[in-house]
Image (cartoon, rainbow, N blue to C red; front, side, top):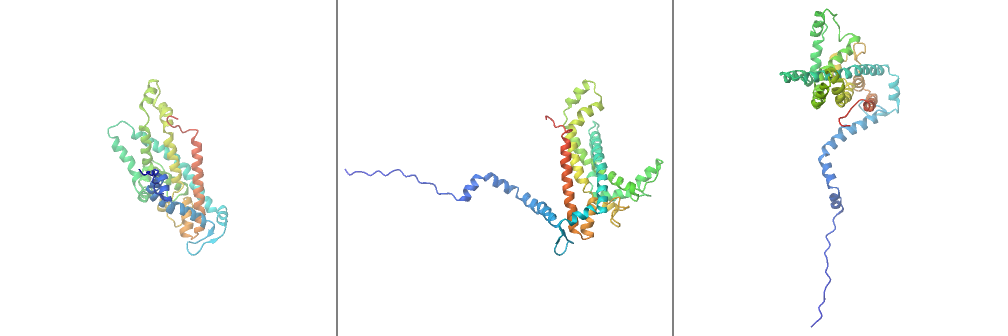
Length: 318
């Protein structure tokens, strides 16, 4: 019998995968996630990151919007320090923020407490209070312009009927910024809905326990409601600062731009001055420098408010 030759078992190796296939299997979840958010990434790069970088670039140039930018170094920023109108715009904007933002928080809180009352028609009241905040800002500005007319305005007629003097809200530098602060409160209904949601989130047992201990309504508000509302108040402060520092549309519609900042530069807000430099005076380089300063100041304000909030914001369960 011939000897049989036993061949060793040979195991066929799987074919080598390509480098891309190995990378895909290892990072599959990351790749799929990036594909899902790719529209946002494209929008972020094209409409946010690139404009910021381009603005930074032309802020160091003399540029009219046409032709080639001429590098000038820090000349735009040095000119800013000696620009009297720039400082007027900074002061007007700071005055507006100092009044409009805290008053807006108080008005939103009062409206939210009113919306939270257990009355039958509360849904109708909520709709009425929220309605002004959904109007387009330019339309609301035209309505407000009619309300504050010196001779035919409803608001001034109401003051006259009360025996108060007739105020020229739109022509007197002492009252022009106050008129803008009052206009800002027409949009408080939107913030009031957020405050209302926070009020609904407060457990009723907290108030019931305080009532059993004999706490008054005012004491319950200061001891329970207000501390638990502080995260929403912080949100409203940040939002109010970011929107208030960019005030433009209502100023441009109500007070116009001929001459800009009328009356007597009392409504020359920061973004209005930025717009005038970029699109009327053809100083795009200087306008870009103003925009960069605005971005940095807004960022610093937000950081300061967040740091300040550590001492008074109370998060539930923290």
